[in-house]
Length: 373
Image (cartoon, rainbow, N blue to C red; front, side, top):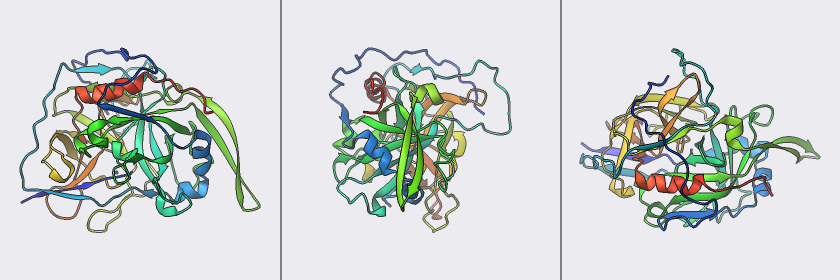
């Protein structure tokens, strides 16, 4: 028997956790040089150009980013990831001071949304280059930080970061996103932050990224003579508008988590149960996943979940509370798995978050952005 892993490239009521060590974002000046294993690069596309690019028509037609990569293992279990230092955490922002209320429903987090981008080196007018992933706002010193998968910011084939990258938190209904469907505004990328082992070695044990975004704007689109025209209004910082998830690392590989995202792609058998228009969620207990040598993947944790392409980059949240819609980011959706060979995805996995992950996070969490130029 073998487990087959397929890369989800685009996008694929909490238990109270004990022992969360309180942490802070600090130790790095806002524009200090990051550690040598952290790759930080400013977006090539000017922010206003990126926002203008995503007209209602293009938003509607953006495809879930599925590279159709397929990895097979011979049943060998992955490395049982262990902490490489003491556990730590940074608390969420934007929490409401209310008691936790038990509910049969899951209150979806405002922090989660979709990111849109175009493939580098391609004709941006060609719809084949219009793609999307999932992502979430997380805690940061300047409340300007988005967490997602590294393959949702960096093209390993072109060895460069994507173009026209924007984040829309609480995205809903791709048919009419500009009429109340982007209630908290649109946030364009300023700086991408990823680990050198993903950028250079294409190692999916490091498939995570943190993006500093400019302050958001609300856009009103209007078609005049068959051409889109827009007006914009500044709405301030991402974290002030939607809050931000906490961040935690060096935790047990067996943790109860929620996974959120916007799946849209097909299962291997061709069935397409999701549309990508609305946020979906899974809940389960993580465990170490098998190795997937094609991705240099040995240290992923995963849970039972039928997410398809489109959910990539969405958060795995530990200690998620319905009352505040916040928890602690303990992973990001990275790879979809068909573990029983029936051509249906049944697991989703994330890189194990350790001190390397924290170093990338810390470098990003201390970067200032401000208003769009």
